[in-house]
Amino acid sequence: MEAQAKDGVVLSLERVLDALVSLGLTQRDAQVYIYLAKKGPFGEEDLAKTMKLTKQQLHSCLRKLEAKGMVIASLEPLVQFSAVSLERVIDQLLKAKEEQGKALQASRKKLLSSWGSMIENDSANI
Image (cartoon, rainbow, N blue to C red; front, top):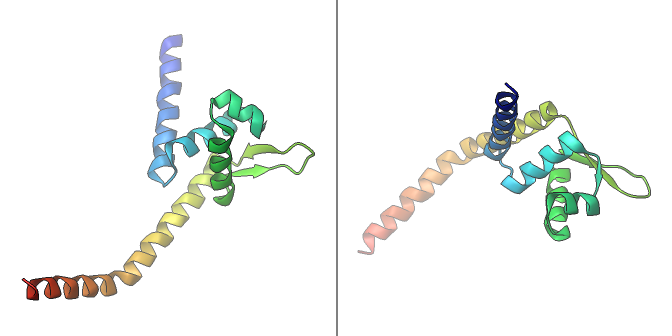
């Protein structure tokens, strides 16, 4: 029974990881977010050691996650990073994807026109 519970937790974590990646995060960024959400808050140095990442790798992840509003840094003497709620993160990522879709839809006609012109020009040069 305990093994099944552990497997269920692993599958749930994989599902969350896959969902975050499908919404535009890198695998590493999603792993850092999930770790902070489960175990945080952490200082950058301790988190790098715990996750076995270089300081540069972790710094890059944290900056990207901060820019997306997924983690916040405390203003204490030693900076601590914390994850925001998964619900809020999913809402933010979905909103960003929706905006990307709207932008692509808005430029669709122009893109197709440019593509058609390019194909015509290539055909004329053969």
